[in-house]
Image (cartoon, rainbow over all chains, first blue to last red; front, side, top):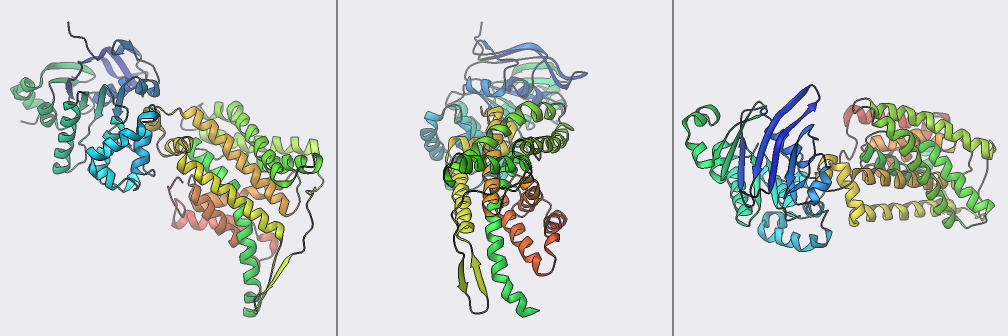
Amino acid sequence: MTEYLLEARGVVAGYAAADMILKGVDLAVAPHEVVAIIGPNGAGKSTLLKAIAGILTPSAGTITLAGAPIQGRPAREICASGLAFVPQEANVFPTMSVRENLEMGGFVQPRETRQRIEEIFVRFPILAEKRRQAARTLSGGQRQILAMAMALMVAPKLLLLDEPSAGLSPIAAEKLFDTIRGIHAEGTAIAMVEQNALEALAIAHRGVILVDGRNAREGAAAELATDPDVRRIFLGG
Amino acid sequence: MLSHVIEELPQLIVNGLVVGTILALPAIGFTAIYAVLRFPNFTVASHATMGAYAGFVANVWLGLPIVPSLALAFIVPALSGLACDEYVLKPLRRTSAATGPMAAAIAAVALTIALENVIRFVFGNDLRGYDLPVYRDWRFDLGFAFLRVGPQQVENAIISVVVMAGVFTFLAFTRTGKMMRAVADNPSLAGIKGINAETVARLASLIGMGLVGVGGMLLGLDTSIDPLTGFRAVLTVFAAAVVGGLGSIPGAVVGAMVVGIGEELSLLVLDASYRTAVGFIAIIVVLTFRPRGILGERAY
């Protein structure tokens, strides 16, 4: 039996008691694995990430990270236990400088901050170049890189990415997917919600398809990417 | 008419600068609380008065010099501001995300009247003054006009500038200061990054009302104090914060200067009793042409 890093079982969550978006979703991510979560709009993909990250409290189900239950705990405690979440929007502190954003990214591990920032600057020279600039002055692609770098400040075991390529130009998106590959190559597990399903399945080991708040299909990413039904319904041909 | 304006102008600008510098402190306190808690905490009026009286007790009753008295003018309103938020305003804010902030703002108006009357009950309605050495004003002949500056005014402005420099250093360079800016910037992301928003909210009330208290005492040092000291200043403080950009700390400083100088310059054309109208006019002009204030969203 595989020892999963993240294991969510029967998660029910939503924004109003009468209207639960997730109606019992399962998601498992093994250490060092990349899982792509795909599905139509409104399927509950982003809601699932929010429930795991502690931004939404699930009303039922269990979520464990490295065997320890995390469901219902506040986001800041979940962050300290090795899970970093990068929201789709508003994922930087706009009026703070790039360097300050990175400091806040590593807020729960202040002792490592200085060294990690240096490492980040070596890895992403564009952030080093713009270290004193306010985050709101960055381009969309640069902002996504910063948001991801902020998550890396805590050397997470698991990275949750919500639509990282949304709103980016094809070139910026391509660069971003390269960055995601690089982060995975260093051993970080990633669960990623992505509209660009083909690109996401190309990076991922496994794909999970959600439809209307439930698991619809699951399998090896390469198989899903070539499955005629999946291609027709979710991948646009 | 023109010669009259030229003669008066330098004096009015200097007075405006001094008033603006002092008003900047309560405006910073007000705007910092707004930036973090997202509601206008109108108890700034009574907390400015409370600071003025706390400083009075330290200075006149306990015989302490001005600077240690200012410490008490910070601490007493800071603790009161924290308690008011924790026990009265926070529970109201939490009733609903949509109407909670409005309920808290209205409750803050009621609370400020209550606190003002507690102060009135303890100290009475009389005007009171601090125990200050009497200095002769400095006079400068500019050739076309005479300028008169009181040493106490200058000392007050210097104290205010030093406190502001302290606030900016705190926000720019300390971990706690950056944590406060992060929550003001993006509270949800701050939570994701492990910052405890509750702690930041308490710090904002504590530091914000402390600054309001120091501002209240500095206003009193310039003239005298009574239970309405803070109430008279609150409109100007509110105008300064809105004009500069509600939630922006440098905005509060710029707004205080604009409103402070504007109020003084209004004396050229208006009777002194209309001076407070300047704050309202400034709010209307800014909300019409630049709704986010002069400096907009810059948090610090």
